[in-house]
Length: 101
Image (cartoon, rainbow, N blue to C red; front, top):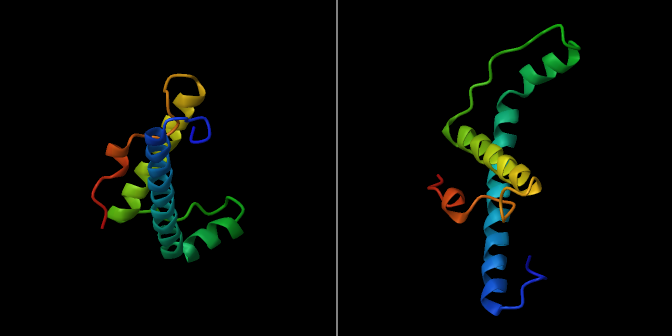
């Protein structure tokens, strides 16, 4: 979209959106890595058991849960974009700029 834009304001807007999206993906990645690190031992036991052991119920903290919701939101929006139901592939800034701790 940036390369197709001819208006400098559109280029600036899309560049800003790309940067915000990159930061959101980084936040999601960090929180999911934290969740996986907390459950590393349990996850390894489940993987080693080849499906025999189901393991514990994973309970994400508030930031991890928010990251999971954000990842699902991005996925839903991208799928809608691919089906032609949305003009843009990612959620708008309002959903990506929620207060983060």
